[in-house]
Length: 345
Image 1: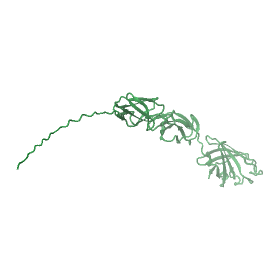
Image 2 (image 1 turned 180 degrees about the vertical axis):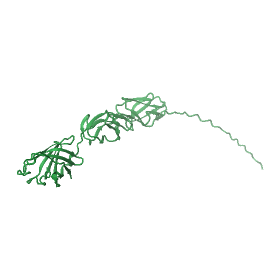
Image 3 (image 1 turned 30 degrees about the vertical axis):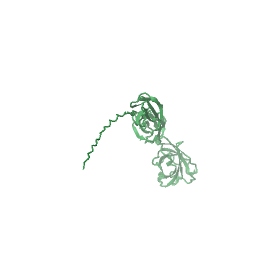
Image 4 (image 1 turned 45 degrees about the vertical axis):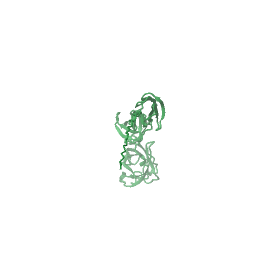
């Protein structure tokens, strides 16, 4: 048996190394100026945006919406200057296409051009106003070109350099607690959401004298009759006229005289008009509208009344009057009666 030996020759072949590929480096734009979400003060009308990256030319997209328009094609360099007369939010990006048709595009960037609010206009009280109600509101107005929400700091005081009275107000009005017959100084500082501020000038006003609510007197009061030891209490009807500074009392029982026996005839109510000082509220005069039917002419002659003294307490709804009676033939000299107080029910 013969053995055949076969020799197989295997030729080993080594493949040549692959050629080094061409590397294309894209010009990626980055580092925007202003930075994303930055706030730039509105100053003039010219602004410049910048970015980093290497390219022979750039296309620049800029606008006030999230889809800005092309504003410059083939711009040379890494900046662009534009003009705007108003502020607001601006969106922008840049892109380029190199010689190998590779497109590089930045992300969408944004920044704000912000104007300060308008100087607050102090609407009420008017400048140097007098007789200002202590219950009235202080009002002003201001606007923001970008439509930003505004807050207000109100400065109010009795000196020409008022301190802050209310901070962070969201409404352009405030009702402070004021003193009567006092000069106040005030100003307003408006601030937008970006911290830009505008400040008004200081203005003054003077509040009114104390003027109580006389409506509490209109109606029925209780008449106390201390004269001649009379104790009767009757209703007194009261009418107020703040225009003429008068109070009219309709007395169904006049100071106790009839009840004390000093008269025999009495028909109807005989009003007494009281005039008061609108500044001090002191009673200055009275005018009685009685007729002879009040007093029996066989017993007494005609009488008249005038205020000896008197006060008006509007807070506690009281009128206190001390009368002087004159013209009575029986009495001879004038007679000053004790104080009679009328208190509203």
